[in-house]
Length: 231
Image 1: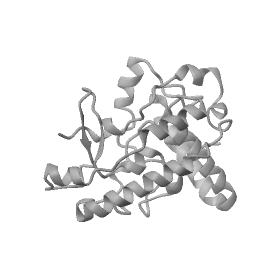
Image 2: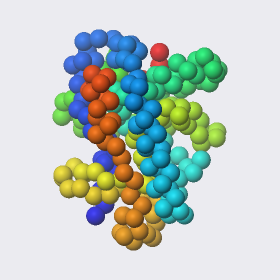
Image 3: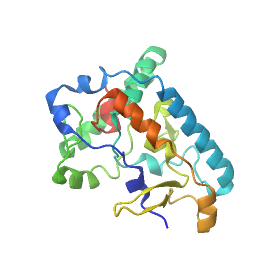
Image 4: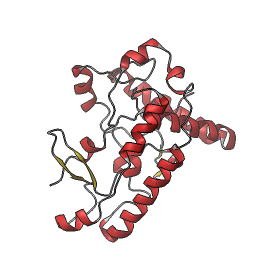
């Protein structure tokens, strides 16, 4: 059985726009420290991805320039947001020109899609109501991620990218909207593969460690990439 990849890769943590309305955008991101064990989480996920890719071989179509998964808004949790913020701080020191380009893209993205953002535009916090959740299903579905360099097909914040981006492609196990568990993978991958071949390439994801680190940050606020790229 397979399940919707987008449903499967949505954040596992609840949204709390009440927190966002209680404080400014900078308080959501810049006042939160990146947990030390985030490096461990990233290392585990990268090793898991490499192993899954080795097993998948030609069945995994992911490559530089394939950017289908870089289009469409998706929720990121506070850990992802802080990691991106740390990455942007590093870029402002090492490559201020690139950092400025990313900020311009993020502002242009918000200028274009911000009026339809189902949450708090001032803080970047996604809303929690049924109306907000329904709105997010239709929000910026064809929009290119502001971190994407359209000319090269590369992610300009690849080292700090969200977990959803890190696990997109190989088969990953999670529950669908109906609660049933299954494997989801990018629709461009595993074309013609049997269910057994797909299962043999499953990529384990350390959800428990990620949840621990989100708890350490102390925020369940979710946002989108554009807000996390801005100071």
